[in-house]
Image (cartoon, rainbow, N blue to C red; front, side, top):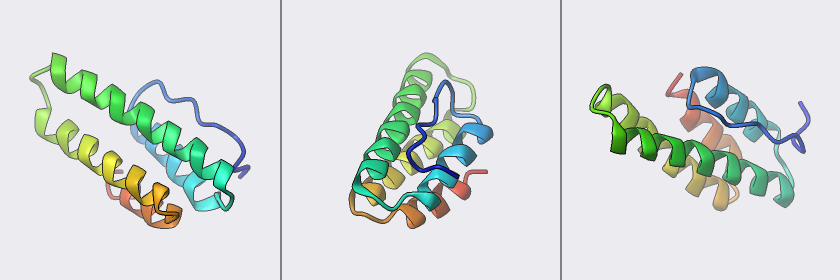
Length: 91
């Protein structure tokens, strides 16, 4: 796992969340954490757009949206492994 690798976020699928979680677990430097925050921001934005435009699966996506926000905050606090564990609860 190369924590300098940036995960391409195109959706909020389990594969995308798992890739971000794996990167979070390997991240040790400030620069890596900035990448992880950006990835989580992308997932948060995509889920926000989904919630605004769809009435299907609102509860599940709303839970994911909130969990990603909490994971983002944990990364900002320098707690990437806790953020990864939180993301893994969604898988």
